[in-house]
Picture 1 (cartoon, rainbow, N blue to C red):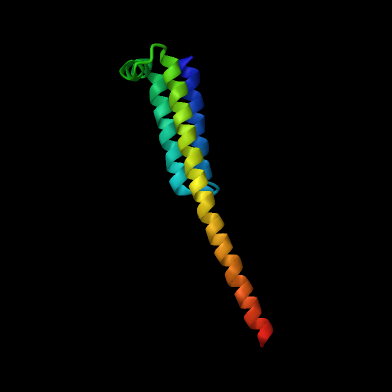
Picture 2: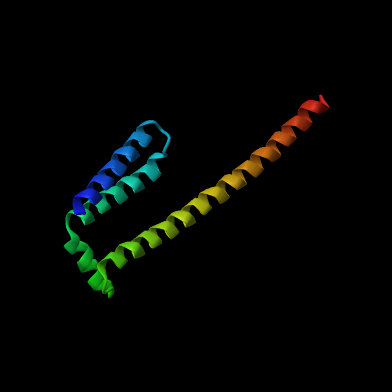
Length: 109
């Protein structure tokens, strides 16, 4: 099972790198996915690390720690994407307003 998880993580790493090189994935976000892939590869190679972190946090069942990390990561990503979306919405509003003002200037002439 550990080998399967390692291979899946490796495939995810390769896909992330391919999308970064194609510029389909922004470099900053791509680094995050590469980091996640590497962490998953480390966890899949050595399950005692997962058990150690689970014990430190106070989780009895070690795989539950992985679910917790997945949920926390998902919440962080959702929050980050909401920030990016809000910033883009502000920029779009400003751009539409500037475009409208430029159209008015052109029509006046």
